[in-house]
Length: 238
Image (cartoon, rainbow, N blue to C red; front, side, top):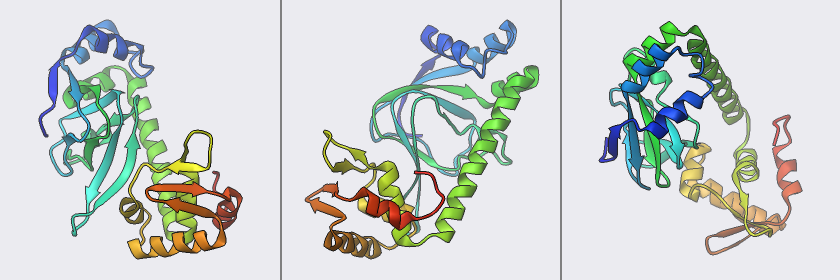
């Protein structure tokens, strides 16, 4: 883990955990034991909190800031698996794996803070409060469904469908105009969507000729979002 600031859990963190719906079922003694083994963590943009393949002895509850989950290809390219926002747990299910290893490298996109929960303390709390264990199981089931649908989409769609879907889902309109901001670079998007960078460039050039988009330097303008929706043409909800 790269250098990040860690310290004993503060009163603010204790209050945050006590208000979290997962921990409301804990009795006073169980909660006290859990919080005694928690740590506050603060991080800056660009810092890596966990590393893929490293032992997982704590999970992180994100309180503020945004992070990315990623791996690296054999060529050293970044493969972004997801964007992590406040309220999310990082490494939670890795704690219950055998062996307990981190499945992704976690890197901060923005400054932020969170709470590191001890694996042993969380296991003990789950045994003492079955409702907490059920929350963890249900959370894992939702993730499994999400990733199964992602794999199905990745293997049953065309590169053009995947790119159109990504732009419609993750493009953030800027200042009420047609310009959008994507969370990843074009190279990262190509890796994430399972296509070569030249394939992505060819699709963008095709859409420019068709008048669906316009690009200017690093900016992308969507001129015909209905055309992109027509390209997707599946029962996938957008």
